Structure formats: C-alpha cells, structure tokens
Length: 259
Length: 246
Image 1 (spheres, chains in turn blue, red):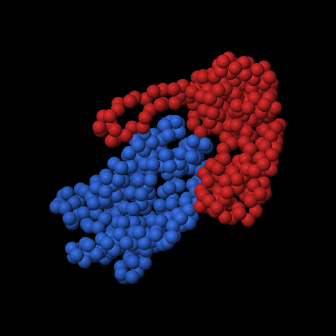
Image 2 (cartoon, helix red, strand yellow):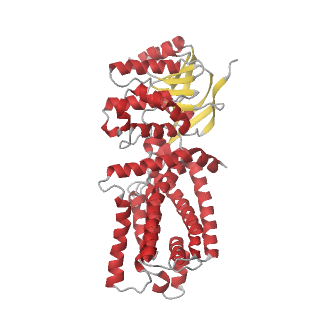
Image 3 (cartoon, one colour):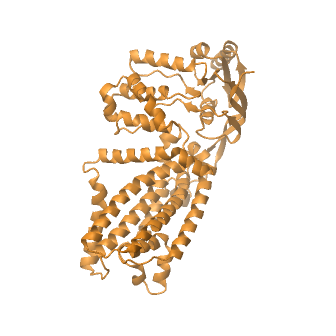
C-alpha cells in the first residue's frame, strides 16, 4: 500500500526534521526546553487552585487528574491546530520537492509526542510523590495511547486537507476546540457532573473525553478501562484515517497549485 | 535508438484559479466566485534520451517551469503520463527546507533528505559539500549567522553535490562572490555535461542554451511549437520574439 511504502521511505526524514524542529524551538527561546514543562504545569496549577482550592472538588488525586487531562488535551488540540495550516506553513518545501503531505503531519505529531512524553514523565513523578497505588492496569496505557495517536492522526488528516481550501479555518477550529475543551472533562469528572444517562453518554460519545477517562482509570484508579470502547474507537480511528489518507492522496496534486 | 530516460506523453496540467474559500467571506456573501481553470500545459508529448541535454525556451507564462515541476514530481499532471524509467530526479533548487537557527551541517542533512537522499548517501558527500561551500568552521554555526553569500554557497553546494540521474534546471545558477560564481558555473557545466546524466534546462539565455544543449524545445502557451537542433529552433524563437516586440 502506498501509504506504508511512503512512510517507510520518509520515516527517517520525519524523525530528523522533528528533532530539528525541537532544536529550533530550544534555540529560539530564552527558557529553552523548560517551557515544555512550565506550560502544562502552570495550567495544572491554575486548575488545581481554582477547582481544587476555591471550589473544593472531591476528586481523588486532583492535581494528577488534571495533569493527565491537560497532557492528552494539549496533544490533541495542538495536532488539530497545527494541521490546519500545515500545507501553507510548508509552502517553501512542497512547491519545490515532492513529499507526501501526511509525512509533514507525522513530523509535527512526533514533535508534539516528544513534548507529551515529558509531561507523562511529570505524571510518573506525581504518581510517586502522591503515593498513588499504581497497579498492573497501568499496562492499559499502551493500547490507550495507540488508539489516541491513531485518532489524533485521523482527525488531523481532514484538517490538513480542508485547511488548504478554507483560509480562516484555524479561527473556527480554535472556537470549536475551546468549546470541546470544556466538554471533555479536563478539570472535572464528566460522569459525575451531568445527570445520568447524559454523563455516561457524553463520556463515551466524545472520543477524547473517553480516552482521557481510560487513561485516568488505568493510571490513578488501577482499573481496567472498557476494552470494548477502546476497540470501537480504534476501529473508527482506522476507518477515519483510511478515508483521510485517500482524501489527501486524491487531492494533494492540487495543493501546490492552490497555495 | 538510444535508451529513453524521460517519456512525456500527452501531458496536460491545469491550474484552478480559485480564490481560497473563506468562511467569513462566504457568510457575508461578499463574493461567490467559482473556480476558473487555466491550462498551463496543453497535451505535450516528447522523449529525452539518456545523457541528452534538452533546453526549453519560451516567453514568460508559456508553461516551462510548470512542466519542469511536473517532471520533478512536485505535482502530477491532470492527464497524460510522465515516465522517468526508474531514474532519480531532482529539480535544482537552493536551500530547500533550510532552518535558519540550525547549523549548516544539520541543514545539509535536512535539505538532502528532502531531496530524496538517504542519511548514508549524505554522510558520504558531507565533506565534499562543506569543502565546496568554503565555509570552514562556520559549518557548525547557525545558518542565521551566515552572510547571504555564505548562505547561497552552502545551498548551492548541497544541490550540486547530491547528484541524481536526471537533473532539472530552472535557469543556470551561479551564486556568491565573483570567484565562487565562476566556480559554481563551472560545477554546473560539469554536472550538465556529464554523459550519464540527462538534463533539462529552462532558460531565457540563448547563449546558454546554444552552448549546452543537444536539442531545444520552444514552448508557447502550453504547447511545444518546435523541438530540434538548438540553432534552428532558437533562430525561429528569436524571430518570433522580435516580431512580437515590433
């Protein structure tokens, strides 16, 4: 299949370019890589201060609960936002050499994945500091993250495509993401906050909310996440990704001409 | 008949002159423009033999660069086929994928990989590229600290030292100071005249095309008006251009 052939061919470039992007960010900023830790930590502290101290939430291990949400949400929203302008931002490359457009997306996702990895490191430290009884169900983080990556990749593919044609799509997406942020239960428990069955349904119908819920389950509460739901979202993500790849393959010829 | 390296058959390339859709514009209904189509290349067919140097001449907007980019694979034609018979191809382009805050050395790899070379191939050519660019210890400094001359020397050196079977040249390049200009021009000529390399050169310089090419194709409005011996084709092209300006 063309997709796998091209990913294999350009994988090293994607990794090298991702490393270069990270180096570039470090070189450009005064506090360098510290921002990769400071940004999510500051957001977490704000939510902990507001909801943990002011509104007195009863959620167990609330700082970790929030930090897991922020880590996953940041990855998802940044993938989506950067995919909208991906083609336009790489105009200088794609107008001069051929490169499969989803390689540029994979490169971006690798950069964000590295930053997310740092955040998961912080989560690990927090689990230790808060003496959370982590158990065997931690293993579910692996399928959880795989489904999460596929879902982010699948959604981003469509935004890569439509971002070429709709100039102000990023503004609309920013508004939608803002709404989604509050509907995803980053700093509160959706299931507890809405009356049944709405809480239950909201958590399962929103894939990001559901995957964050599964991550918290396996990390904080040492519980087995719903394997059926993980499987369902995995299949949906794969189908979405196949559609997105086909869409890009069919239209990438026009991207250079459009920009 | 000699081995064919490039086989272009009935290639059509269409640009859609569509203003990008804007949610804001369309909600306010300020315009309702539809896509206009512009055929930049109108069904061209030709072959280039292995080791041949084909020149393309034509006035601005005749479709030369579009055709070159399609042969390079930047985009595929709307109809027709371009068969490169398994040969590697590159469109000579300076500084593809350069990142200013990274070192010259890192940019060699980044740009080289984008041009389709493996890390191993680039490693083998790395020293040659650095030596040719005459950058010395600057190679490990960020590109943003380079003068514009140093920047183009490095970009040129990468492009010209990572060689492919088919080379596509949009205007023969010479960069840097006077000394380096002569050196880069000589390098370009040696690359072009390599008997194993197939080259297509797009140029407005009659002199360059006469000196370097085995055949010349005159393009006008997306079609090949004539293809053949450089002297004959270029003479007709010059006559046409003189008539146009009179």
